[in-house]
Figure 1: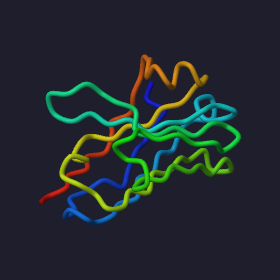
Figure 2: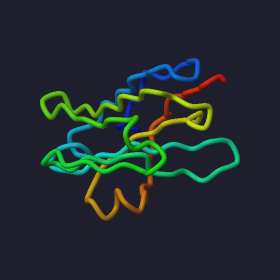
Figure 3: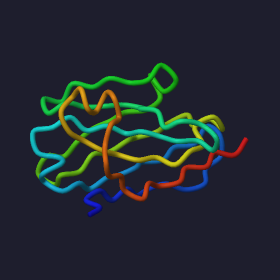
Figure 4: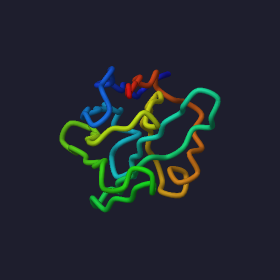
Length: 121
């Protein structure tokens, strides 16, 4: 049963910004690390950023300084603010959450539908 709903994607020109949102069920969100992942056509899914339950964050080198992950614990929601977007950022973006090691491995049985981000040059 899908318990993750991502939104906020779209088509944007290079240099533009988007803000993604992900609403998760309490069992996924509460007390757990949350992360954003992305999968481009023909490529494996990769982690973009994660945030632990205490608010500490980490980013992939490719997005560091451009993307910001945050969470609203009252609303079981995690956000990804994406600035200075590049064509290489084009992908379907997914969120998920759990124990930190699982988040780092990206090992989950279930995923949401994702949200498409397309950056034109």
